[in-house]
Image 1 (cartoon, one colour):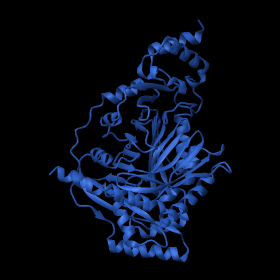
Image 2 (cartoon, helix red, strand yellow):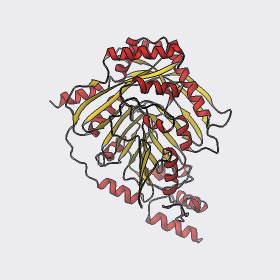
Image 3 (cartoon, rainbow, N blue to C red):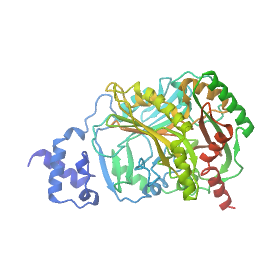
Image 4 (cartoon, helix red, strand yellow):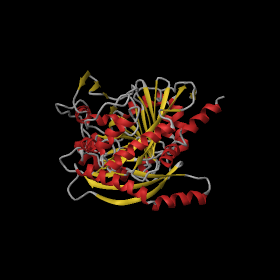
Length: 519
């Protein structure tokens, strides 16, 4: 028998299965019932692709190039059940596809215990790695790419899982100050960093479409054994201890709205996003609050992120940038109507939004902005808009959504694409830089994680990120949440102010309900 068959037979008998091709994902494999024919085919497949699973290290590579994928029993809430074990641990993160109906809601990704931590605050990035730590003033997007290449090198994987290890975390709106030169006017009162990204050598990935679950990465048996051995911490119930307060009264909002209109009429911009921030004091478990918000919002891009001194709770409905097989997709939201319990009234709201000229104009402005941003790194002639002004409905609101696609140029990386589009145009206005300058002038506080992004960059080149709207930051027993909207020349202050409240109608009162249920 050839040596490679002997070696691979031993591998199958003694370790977790290593899957490297889409053909490995079949019903026999996932159930553990594999025929002799399947086994022989798999052995021949692995023998023909030895370079995808080997232990040889390059000079600048600190880990092996071996990918393991271990099937585990699937159920729809498995990621919540497993994350409950580690939710109190810093750098435990969960990306959740909480909607069972939305077209983009398919995968959950759970990570913990990162190999490397990358934390940016202002002009300085702290990198903590297995051999020590250092500080750098290098561009954080470039630094992230370098650290990932060093500690978790690229891997040629052609399977269907979106994440096989790599970078995962959040990028705050204020990280945009490292991309563009902005004034420093708004108060910086939150300590949560501008960027917190871990490089993770393993993950649990759920596929809700195929109803499968896997532990993927390196040393998966060891890591999964560690995960299931963790005991959930018995935290105090989440309770708000004060009422929600905004950082501007309605009168102050109207005053700032008037300043926006002045800028629009003078030609500085043709759309500006203006947001208000709410905060309340709390005690107890932020993970419990997240689970409550998830049940009521069902955001397809939901996430819970725990770092050293704060937590981020996101129930976002909006994709920022996805990259798969070098194909780019972004889906900006611009245009909102509230939902109603009455079916007829609710349908009328959606129909009104679908034909609203003002909302279509706002949406088209952002489509044009993102086409320009993506065009910086896309192959010439590939940027196109296959869907314009679609209606997507969520538990709280109807949204107007467009889709832009392109192909990434061969000489640009995933991190280059993220940087070229950051922060997302749907939450700034247009032109982007001037809109950001006006936001800095008119909003009392910096946005922090709000209107930034949460997502991953897998070591096989795939990326998916959200826009962090419907997102809360919890630190020092205070919890913060924002809502805003794009203002144009014919916007009305009363309706725009009400829209900010509509967007929070399944956040502010829901956490108040948690409070009252504990009384």
